[in-house]
Amino acid sequence: MASDLSPSLIPFLEAVEKGLLVSDGAMGSLLYERGVFVTQNFEQLNVARPDVVKKIHADYLEAGAQIIQTNTFGANSFRLDRHGLVGEVRRLNIAGAAIAREVVGRNAYVAGSIGPTGLVPGPNRAKELTAARATFAEQAAALAEGGVDLFVIETFRHLDELGIAIQAAREVAPKIPIAATPTFDSEGTVADGTPPEEVASILRDFGPDIIGVNCGDGPQLSLTMAERMRRAGLPLYVQPNAGLPRSVDGRLLYMATPEYFDVFARRMIQAGARIVGGCCGTTPEHIRWMARSVRMLGSALSQKTQSVPPYELKGGHPNAVEPTPLKQRSEFAAKIADGKFVVSVEVNPDPGTSPENALAAAKMLIDAGVDIVNVADGPRATARMSNLAFCALLLERHGIQPILHVCGRDRNMLGQMAHLLGAHALGIRNLVVITGDPPKVGDYPEATAVYDLDSVGLLHMASKMNRGLDPAGKGLRGGKTEFCCATGFEPGAQDLDREIARLEAKVAAGADLVMTQPVFQQELLDQVLRRIAHLKVPVLVGVLPLVSFKNAEFLHNEVPGMQIPDEIRERMRAAPPGAEARKEGVRIAREMLFAVRDRVQGAYLMPPLGKYELALEVLDGLNR
Image (cartoon, rainbow, N blue to C red; front, side, top):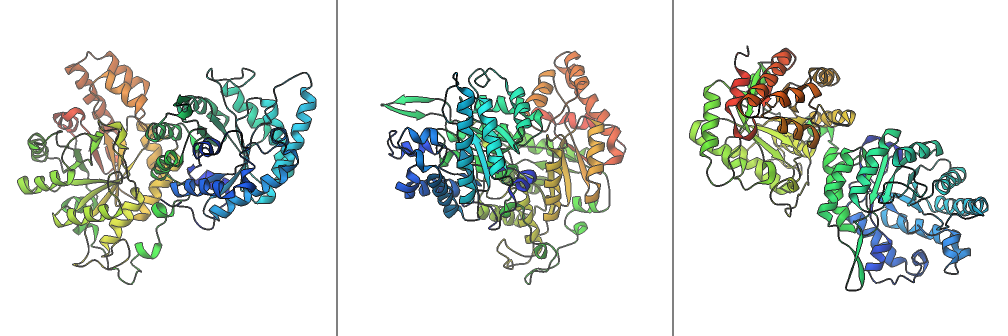
């Protein structure tokens, strides 16, 4: 997979502000794995074996890295002196920057890597720091001369040394952004015992643009440190080791798999990291998995999934036709276009071969007055039939026109195109377009995710089909599709600004309405509705009746974007387990829905554990 960056890069700090970025992984441990003996000075390879360094940079770029760090971590006079290279600081750093720039061109950012001197504090510490300041200034000046886009001052254990490195880099190249990423021991402190909260505060005073954490004992420690550093208010850059190395057949190997590493990358992003990457032991394969996550969760610079050429959406393409008016696409779309209050209930087939229970539940709901049922796309990664097959059965057996969830996880671009065309041929006209959760949360953690397209890219594809175009801009044989396209939204997202920006991109790409994740706070919904009012898009509020205190605690603590207020969780805790707890969950859901029904155009009910009767209990007495 090639990098998604624009050939003409926007300024680095602007990119950080706009979205997520993925950095590369290890250099030293990868050189070792590729046969460079540990007695060789790795930075000297910039002039002695530039082809080896270039290949590693190219592999990371191909894997999806958007920041490539130079092979200059130890290119300061103190470390080079151990190899008789003390006079080579400028030459090796310029060469390292030039190699990285040659590989990436303007398709990624080049980060000048600056590591510590390796000196242990002693009685002449002040003198040593003065000398270190001079070599950091020399190194930063050479990297700037080589054309880096930012400095990454990384893996420092001593804050005083890190401080002078930041100051030296700032003085010689004041316009180049600085990221400062110390490393913590297993106890969660730097060398002098300072915890991450204080480290973040101290670093902020030193004046870098970005702070973070790298190396250490693996993803779990880095995640914990990042969570504790985020209150400093600066963007976070997190690059953990791939766990601690083990000796296998006489070689030190890092055992954390790319899949395991990626799980923590997602958690680091949810904790507030703006840039994620890898340190010792990580490989291009680790970065490939992380790049998928960054692309899914909102890359700052992804053209493939976020850039929507206006002429294609406005019908200006020479092969485009006018889309069918929303009101004429389906019965459900007509209700949306007429401003009617609508109710959708999620119904999914049970795992296994039989759809009968879910078919009966869907018929029961429609007969009871629910407007439409929607069917998720492979929820929880369990062994259940495809939602396309189940939707076809709903149409065939009961004449029920459902909403088909379409997510970017399981199909590549060609597969998605075939999926949509097949759905339309079967008579399905309503879609919920989402990016989709990774398969790691289900029963098959070895399954891989695709994410050729995220929700924005999928909406763009469906919108083009509604104008009679395939993704390449060719006219569709047989005419156009007539999809009504909903999309998802998380009112409780940790970064609400980014979530709203994503929603703006989805609406621009063709979303006709929004279906939110479950909401338990009226104030939160009111705030969100005010902030998205300019989009003028119908909103169906997500409603989930809780079934137990354990259920409420799990959703609040483990599901990103879910916020269940203390008083709601306390009500569920006080309710006796079983039927009484379910009744209390229904009461809470009814209170929320009845209070906000005049501010939204509908409700999206998600009855848990196949208890579809709870949906009707929530709706009982609702004046629509």
